[in-house]
Length: 470
Ligand code: ADP
Image (cartoon, rainbow, N blue to C red; front, top):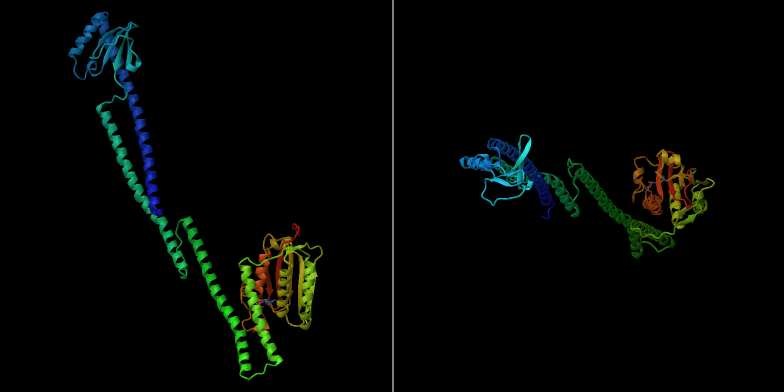
């Protein structure tokens, strides 16, 4: 009885059984009442008929003494179906004295009571001269009626058994229908747990089961994707580590073999490879800490413009070196922002550096600070529910990113330009880190880009004071 299938089948049968029993009890009770009323009516008409007979005899004998004897004679001559013999019959005079009793029981010398049977008054010349009492009990049924009732009882019993049997069969069929998709779900879950690839489940016709199958398929597809992503990431990490490590190994081996001398230039190159490796490992560690929710944050209200000035100050020397115009545009009256100062500087610094990296000399990189306007959210150009948040935009006039690449650029190790050397850019972790840092501080990040015109990274962070709708 532990399986859902047995339970459902049993419940079906139980419900049918209880239903049938209730109907059976009701039918029998109603029949019983109907038969009681019938007998009552019949006894009353028999009592009335007896009273008529007795009144005729009374009239003919002109009083009770002769009438009683006539009744005795009539009893002696009567056949088995005669009313005088069929039922207990008592006749009382107007004073309640028993005149006649067709039974053998002790004579009752008292006024007849209704519960003794059915009474009918004997009326002669508009005067009540006595009472006839017909004995019998309510529900005193004829053979045909008893047979009919027995048949009804049997039909109810057989009907109940049939109904329960049908309920069992139907229950079995329905529960098989319900549990079949659940079984496929269980098999699919086991396959998934054993590491096999997910094969989409067929969608059953029932709505709830269809929703379950769709949810399972979505979950399994996402799990597949995550697993593939993880495998890809491990492969990417190995690949990213192998290159600087083999450069280091080769250089060290050639120094060891006397092919190269440990000159300051060689040592500097070794140190550069080491710091590249260190940065990569640091980035990976930062990401895994952020993923595990273990990155400690010191969130506090900050002046966004002061933060902007600091970060622009940090990257200005590099912008000058690359002959790129670096600008800070801040709208007046921007609310303080809720963020961790170090992490905010890291986010903005990273985006500005990317801007400088992908913008040719003579271009412009701008950091804009303001408030997210409500109409931008309404038009769908920004996520919903962030109107009034503090916005940071890092816009460049570089090559831009093709629309097909935009959804991937926040993925780990993703580089739009596959041919780009590691030396020309970062590890492909920069934007993934920026995205995680924004998200764990409760902010939002999105990107817009036009090939040939430039790229803008948008960040919205919660304000420290309640948002004023722009
Ligand atoms: P990387 O360290 O390679 O720059 P990121 O995660 O910072 O890695 O960026 C991922 C990819 O997104 C980059 O390889 C580049 O193709 C693209 N990208 C990022 N910022 C810009 C930008 N400002 N303009 C054009 N492409 C960009």
